[in-house]
Amino acid sequence: MKRITILRFASAVLMASALSACSSSPDDEDIEVANKGAEALYEDAKTSMEIGNFNQAAATLSALDSRYPFGPLSHQVQLDLIYAYYKAAKSDEALATIDRFIRLNPNHSDIDYAIYMRGLVNMGSDTNFFQDIVGIDRSDRDATQARQAFNDFKELIEKFPDSKYAADARKRMLHIKNRLARYELAVARYYMKRNAYVAASNRGQYVIENFSDTTYVKDALEIMVECYDYLELKDLKESALQTLRLNFPDSSYVN
Image 1: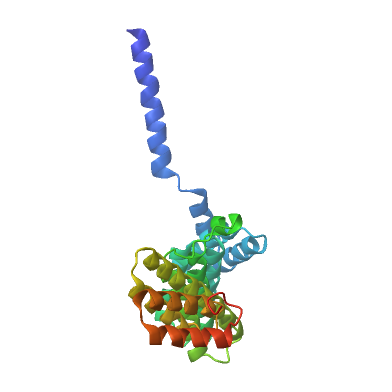
Image 2 (image 1 turned 135 degrees about the horizontal axis):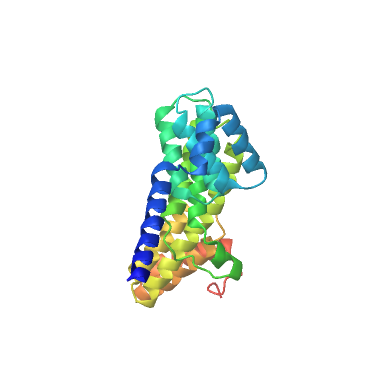
């Protein structure tokens, strides 16, 4: 009986201690935020970013943004928070912060930067680092994020053609075009395997019409030639062949 009593007493003490700690002791981070001013917290965040600790920078900037939403540093804090989230691969948080900044500050001088970062975040979301490392071709993966990134960069160039981010946005748009062209061709080949030649030829035509400045025009024309051949559409086949012959005389389809 004594042993049982002692065990119960020890359990009660441990439970009381745990409850006391939970109810009366705030997290160290909360204490730090409460004790430091905006400038000191911002310096901490900048230091974290300088050494590449973007998760910590994002945590500090987020706390600073919540505690001082209308302070003199608020806009810069939000812009830095966007970058920290991006570098920490927290795309959902980054996009939410970007959309909030644009909505609340439509005439801010750094709106072009916010739009540019939205493009970078969406472009990053479309990339699979591990597949790229081992050389796995997944051009057939969903291209929604790539299209959104393309539209973001397009918006930047149309609204702010003289932005210092415009030149890089144009380069990235060309890269995304190649990605989207590969996706369309992957879908076309999928249709061809299932004898859906009309759908496949339409995908090839889409590449010709929308991504003519990419390196995949030749593949698109060859798909169209093959599909028209199966469909016995002689005039369309000859037209595609003629274009292929003029632009890519080395194609095996020409010979």
